[in-house]
Length: 183
View 1 (spheres, rainbow, N blue to C red):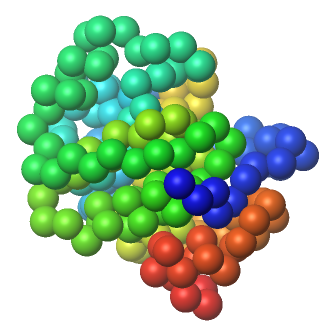
View 2: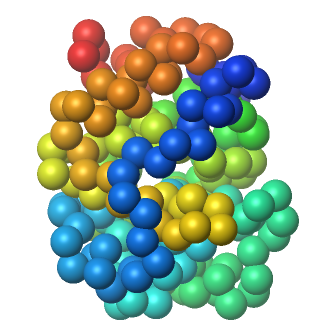
């Protein structure tokens, strides 16, 4: 496992501002969501599945707020009919080569893909937004507030890439692993 980027404490505050609108109504979010649909986090993925939609790409780690998810959430996610399942290793506050290549590969696969993260998937929303095609929807949880809905577009991608560039590590390598080149 190779850590490519690491979140330093001074960037945590910048990540508290959501990258899109927050909603507690999953059906309303899904009604306007683009394709492909990406979910980051067990709770968001659970709510999307409970609403009758299997995300094109879902990243989960069996944890929420540093605690294990309830059995109902775990069972719902694990029993969902994902076409492909990948497992990647990604410690807290990092983005590893394993996660970045696993995420990129999930977009290239046919069907739906569940990416199980051994470690933590919290930062995965950033590369998911960076690599998602224009018009795609990336949904992630804002603790105690709801679902953040991000529609992939150049302006939000630039904001995300700027944050990734400010992390400690090899940003050129991260972009390469995501297939972004010199974006």
